Length: 385
Image (cartoon, rainbow, N blue to C red):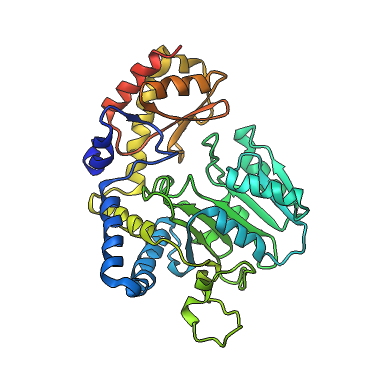
């Protein structure tokens, strides 16, 4: 099946382009344009009163969509921000622990966490312990074992590692360690949200933070990051914007109030257009019966099509870091090779967009690709030097 009609604007903008970087910069569906246009029209029509609609209607609808996708049923536990880094900073500052904060992470975390935690460690604000992601097959158990040692204030791990596409599959077990007075457990779900079906669930929702966003598989573009914040964890974040007391602006001057729900983690004025886009895309998916499970099945078929045909290409000699094994899988295939940078450049020169991280070529898949696109990709891969 082909779903190209849902992406006509993005595809028609460059008809000759092969875009296999859905994991990096997902093409925007037509519905996102309509959502963006609605945000502009509401701003023009409602002017100052647009914030009433944003916070009462758009915000609530977006919260409900995230909670439904996570499988928590806790819409009021969702807060939004322009990016996950902003939310990470607020989380770190909300910890009750005195510095240095003891942090457990993997060595495969994305730069928004890796860089910030490294800098905090330089400044004496954190002590960071890293669990090697390799060997991949034992990563989940090794990370869980390190967390169980009980020597950390903050435990932070990606559900899908951005470099390898391998998954951490002990979220529920990790959740049993979390306490309001520490440790706090944070799952980075940026490569899991709307890629893995029901990635979180009610079992962990009561004690674990979850970060994600709309830039990847939610297809909504930048500016729609979110945090699932369990109740009783960080009731008064020390880095806070005035939107965190948006529901109680009648407080006496000089007092610092907080929302009782996840909105306690809010910052200040933001661009709400990303929320409009997110809602519009979610409605488009629902109208077409495109659940995360169905999209994943489509993607896995295209991934298998590629893997069945790479024997005659240079990728046959690369190490596939995340083979298809019948379990929930990342939306990209990660090939490790000393030639990865060159392959990326050669493909880009042929208007075939992939992604490279060090010595790993990442090929990402989405519902705007069909069999013919993979056939063209295979042909180009066969021409690599």
